[in-house]
Length: 248
Ligand SMILES: C[S@@+](CC[C@H](N)C(=O)[O-])C[C@H]1O[C@@H](n2cnc3c(N)ncnc32)[C@H](O)[C@@H]1O
Image (cartoon, rainbow, N blue to C red; front, side, top):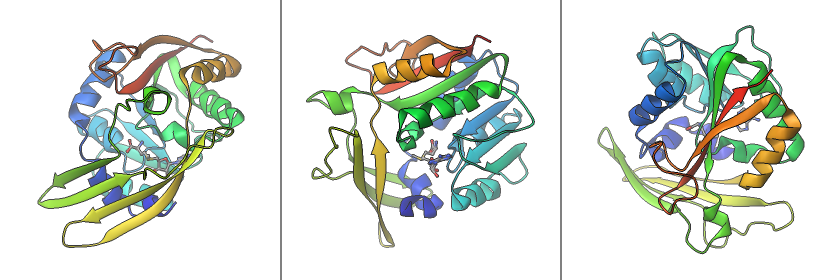
């Protein structure tokens, strides 16, 4: 996907996130995890933040460009970067915490792919380990009041950009629940990066079904924000964050 061939632009577009606060939440939910695996990690912002805090982290992604970028940015940190498919990988370690951030599961196009991803995540959890999946909030697609905006501006290290993630004409296919989103990252005074990214929309009940089909995992909590005080069904909720424990 073209957008992921420009990791620096993707990282700039997503720099609206408070990665430090998100990692604070992930650490506290996991009971101070001692090892972390980030799946579909892209630039591996969260894995790198864990590594900066002295927690050895592994970042896995399919894109060679993203892996190269994460490796370079994480140079000198206790960070391993692995190029692999999140639905089909085997690492020699198990982890206290396995995270999948920013709706990366929208790249899983079928129920079988979702189940394979969950099975791989489960097999890499240490005893008592926690998996955290951050997905977009279903209200974005199933209500008249989406929780997030498709257009925003960012500024980081003196570079600013205008981002458009999806156009009003990008229609969700009602049968496959896939939408091809037109993405534009316009760096002020510089490059304009454009691409089309296919995303599969997953409902909360489909997530439930995939977890049951994968087996060996149970939902221990769901939140609507990294602030754990925001329930999933609150009008304040803007993400669907699911915490899973291994049951066998
Ligand atoms: C929306 S980006 C999110 C990156 C990162 N999770 C973050 O929080 O910024 C999605 C990432 O998923 C990766 N990806 C897509 N399909 C994948 C797969 N089957 N296995 C591993 N990575 C995949 C892409 O290369 C891309 O880096």
